[in-house]
Length: 417
Image 1 (tube, rainbow, N blue to C red):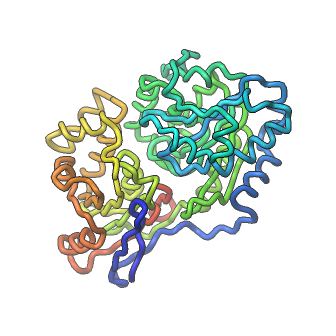
Image 2 (cartoon, one colour):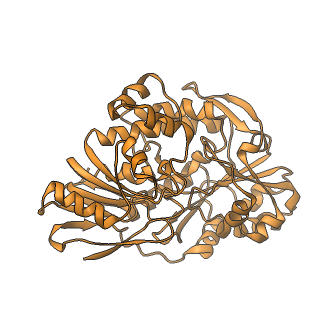
Image 3 (cartoon, rainbow, N blue to C red):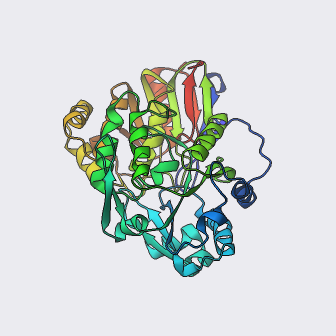
């Protein structure tokens, strides 16, 4: 069979023997009544756990809308016009609104990127800024000891609205919800304090209840409350297929339940070879983001199997500390030991990759220099077909294969677990 695998803006074609393919983990078929802007409008008319958006914003003078940066597929340009139409209808003027891009630990954005994210009409109407452009305000501390240090426009707002897309997250359980605040608009030190919990067994993909890291980031909401959220679930073409609005916990949980119906994939057994992609741009801009597909792929591969990880990584590693950790280690186990005593943001991604490498080889199909890839403990390839052919060469002609074309979104689960 021939398959198209996402790779940057130009997909690659790979041919696999039919008899070897255990499955292709596409999203489940879920019937939806509305999509796109129409679905956003439906959810805005039916908020979960809050009053209407119009009631919430009425009379507010400093409204901040937190949304995702260029590394996320969140379609802000679809959601924001629907949202702003209702905010304006409540009597709020554009000059009372600030859109803040939640950078977390990511790089700053160009004005062209900001315009692309929100669309020209919104960009011309409303002030659009990166969270990193400001100082931070200390708003308190979570019971777990994480400082709640929030960028000033968000901290000083009298109404906070958070946007995001919901997908699986390898230690926060799911993206969306409170992640817009922590880590979205928080300091690096605050993010590090929260993310240090990633090494705990309860911090894993698809888990909310009993996830100590998720609890800590939601505890931050006591210090920095959010008035309203709009969270969306996207299909493999990045179209909105479900939207939830309202309370940052209750509405988010409803979105997570829908995501499970769409992207949780039961498999009968693990495979010798797992071919996994982020699905192409923008999710595979760098290895820092592409790692998410690797993390989900690990749930599908046998011990000592091979993961063929596909990601353009045109921007390289994507984070300075991440790169430094990967290059300074002599072997993957060094990274696991280091994270236990010296947690650093960026280093956490290196440790997560190392934990995968303890159990499987990783063949990386990317634009990165081959020698550089070897130095970070992976085997480099420029073509998906070459990588798959080599995996069969090493594991034998009868090796089983699972394909995850949208690995950052799809969570494989063996049996009914």
